[in-house]
Image (cartoon, rainbow, N blue to C red; front, side, top):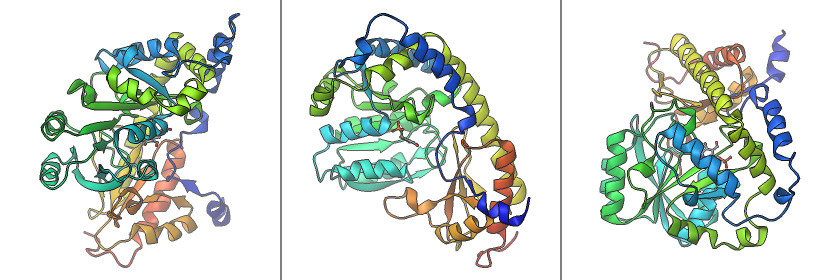
Length: 381
Ligand SMILES: Cc1ncc(COP(=O)(O)O)c(C=O)c1O
């Protein structure tokens, strides 16, 4: 392969999309055939605002089995993905202009969703154990938000998981100061059952609303997700013009996903992608550790799709995007993930889109670019 071909063929470690080669097309074809085989045309009609009752039933069963904590169909609202779920929650539980605390760093598109409803975002520091609850407590002396938005498992972009003791402290603070916790748990099911801390709602089912999605466990194009919360909060969320007018989110997609769950397709696929992503993440971490110098640091994580890399002080990840692109690799610079523009010397790699051989080439290209930067403060150690 010539250099020229290399340059055209940019490997994009910036996007958070799955590898097309592992998307479950054949499996969903079978699920769709099963879902549409019966005589009833109910899935072509408007559905109930809360979402397909059969999907809520099979989803509750899936969540209960995989998280080891009981989930009630009555506490599930089907959404068009976690982004839609977050939009419904902010619209209902935070007035325009209200303050919302978000982790620093955090999932950047969530900022767009929250800001488009007029929210004012305030960053809360995080570390390798997730949201810094002591910093949060200090911030609460000054201001109490409508809610705290957190990604408590396999965080995007850091990959870290909020520890059990911090989970407990977070909900205690929520109870003490009277705010809600919105737990974006889209990566929960990518963990091995029983290995990750229990979902945040198990610490306080009343104050925590959980967001989930089929985007990370079937495919983003499915555009189905859910909110899990108390029946009374759910009634407030369902009291929504779009859900009333549209009759709930896609009954036909819901019927297909229900079949995927009830036929065992979802379980089978989950086991497969857990193993694939785990291999890819470990592979990238090993390559980075092996090729970079000690002044680069990979955030330790136990799972998920992301690798968060700290560059030496003085290196500007945003400025490195162009030379990296010229070398045939793309990443997301740190400041994108901060509502305050922090993390100039960090970058995120997503391991989902490529197999190990492409990831190897990508990390080689990236390492070369990172190591030849003259402005590295500490130099090679
Ligand atoms: C933390 C987090 N929340 C939500 C989403 C988007 O979810 P959905 O496709 O269900 O809207 C993503 C996608 O990357 C994410 O990382």
